[in-house]
Length: 294
Image 1 (cartoon, one colour):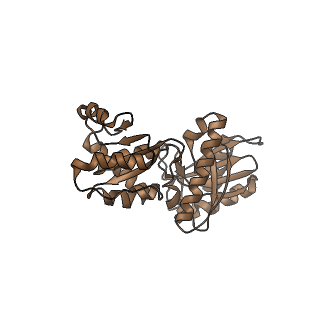
Image 2: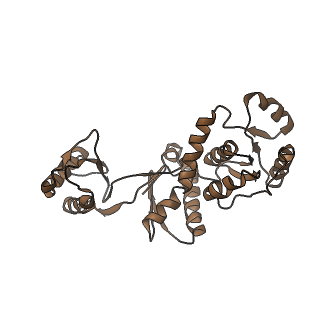
């Protein structure tokens, strides 16, 4: 189950356009990884069927627009089937004295409420695993069991893996970014997260950041030849922007540097999304992106 929260807030025509872009990007990421998937959707969710769940989750965590991913068990919305599937799902997690909670949500017409379903399933777990003395704890559970009833189908899972969020790659314009270290790399990442295709110009120290992280999020990104002379970097970046028809360039600037950089850029927009970040925040955000890249 793939969630894409921000897209669901758009108007219907924009949402359809963004959902198409997200689906295309997901399929492309699987193809680049040498595998395939099958997609279907409802409002606010995509369902990805793949041969290996763990590999699929690693891929989906690199797709912009995806806010989180869960490996789910899908069953018919029938009380006996839900009970059996929940007990099977939690069996391997039920250590002695475990504190657990059942979180139920539903859409559609049913003869039970979400609260009634959660309470009943909690009772089923207590009864089935009474020899292990589980305890209901809705505030600080060690194990959470999520039950999403969506009309005639129900989805069960025990956790969520975060994705990068943002907007699908390709729904905004094009930019070219100078990747001269974590700050420059994070600037490129943040523009990609807002839907921009980003051509990348690394310095010597930035090449590893491009290869090991940024290209995981966009395997088709144009990468310029690494530049070693920082004095030539902006001129090379402008050429790369011309070649890729970029609307703007991304630079790691201090506040005082922005007016001069804007003057040199002429009509082209200059982005510096990390301008307000201290070094510790840059490092923390970049580390989070690198973890998603896997």
